[in-house]
Image (cartoon, rainbow, N blue to C red; front, top):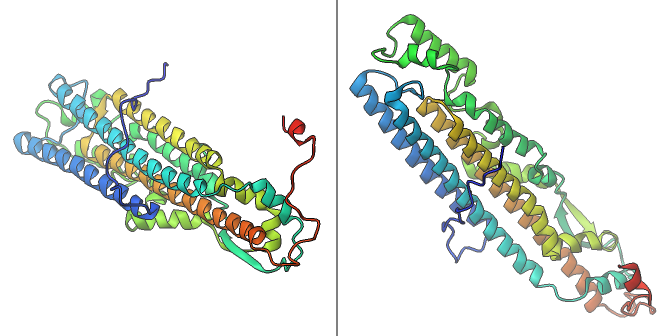
Length: 360
């Protein structure tokens, strides 16, 4: 089927004030915007469902099989599609803020890193002296990769949207439950069938998915973000001057090379766009919807996406900043070297005459 970009007209939401420079603080604005919009959607759906029940005594189940409810079915689809589009605007805002911050860090480095790296090789001072510290960042690739465990949870969550849309698998099931004149609990069979289906398909808690809960956590969203950041960043390790010299090129790449960092970020950004497009496509294809559990579920799925975004932007910014500090330490060793710190032959490296040819 031809790919349709449902998000082509969506732009970064104006939710983070210009005076905010901290990525951590920016993530709080993303959380608040997501909360407000999801709460608004849940409230409107809850009111519609309550009003319908008061008027008919029937639980609101929407199906294409019921001509009288086709309009309402399309309306709830539009509400959920707009929810995902809003969330994409929030995600864009988060990425825009962190990439701008990282670009500023990288722009501060103008001295030739190759010259620094080449002179550091001749350092003969105390190489056991601590140059700084960095996190291990062992889980960062898993967080940002389209094949990582976090992406897999979201992908599975999108597939499960069909399951959470309705506890009934056919139009006849829905009609037997909520069709013309049938009331909630009219027969023990109807009521028990609905309850059993809810427990089996919704994991005993409508709107909740056990896998998504691994991202959402049990506290608030900032606590969930903090938990993921702590996990993917790992332990802090001390870096000696010897370690710095040996891995200087690695620190340069992620600490000062914006193209390297942005490429890492773009992989996750593009996959998130694909995921939200897939979610919208799923919503548009639905034929039956139980509004309350489905809206609750899509709200939690959207929240999980923004939590992962905030965790990734924070971890990427932390890695960039920590690596940049080590690069700066290496440059200070060269620029502020004391007599005897370097071998006398350690003039600034000008390169082999054939270097340019080997670089082709």
